[in-house]
Amino acid sequence: MDKPDRFHNHAQNLKTTDTVTWQVICADGTQREKDEEVITEHFTEVSVNGMPAFRLSCTPEHLTELVVGRLYTEGIITAAEDIKSLFICGEGNIVEVVLNDNAEFKPYTGHEPTCCTGNKQYMGRVRELLHLPETYVDRKAVFELAGKFVEDGKLHRTTGGTHSCYIRFEDGTTESFEDIGRHNALDKAVGHMLLEGKNPAGTMVFTTGRIAADMAEKTIAAGIPVLVSKAVPTTEAISLARKYGLRIICRAWPDSYCELK
Image 1 (cartoon, helix red, strand yellow):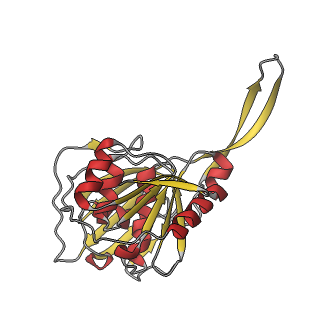
Image 2: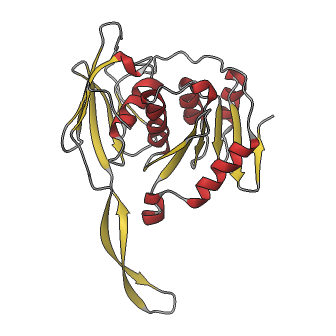
Image 3: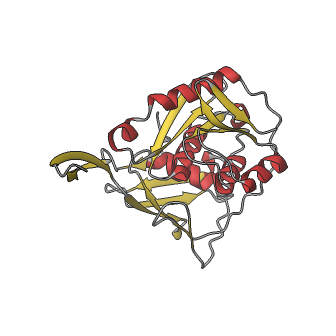
């Protein structure tokens, strides 16, 4: 995917895994050594217009998509075009975003944790949640996404340490993103959607994580009308879905799924 010329990502080929040796101790008393790949936990500080915006604990790939998606779902930007420039340093630890003059950024002095250990955000949600357009759910598309989940993501196959988010567009194309945090994986998918200029109203996302209120809220903020998961929703996520017209599909497997009535 070609990024805009105003986006400069110098963090290329960052390590997403490392190898560790485990001492495996069995119930019968036998022991053996086992080499295994462990997922990298990467920390990125993001500033907007020179002011701290958020600190991310993430998997160090698709950082541009992650930052663009987070800016959008938090309401800091309304489109990728609101970003005048985006710079990621060579180590991927510093991201500097400058907005166009018509895009407003209102930081605040507090901070709050998000789903991932080490994630901090330095601004409150400013995007107003709007009712989603009524949409048709293509059963074949749901089962297609469930089948892709069974195939598993590359990093999860290797480490077992990531969540995945699959995003499917109106034209049937599908992209997948992985991260140690399910919110981050969703933000990467949303960032990809924005950078590709796709219509959120014709989009559905499949998350491998449970659907809590924050995941439902983030999906609604992105304007995506269908959220699918192999897991289950919470009562608050269901309340948000009913209020804003989000179609929630859970326990999605290649042979069946449940849809909220």
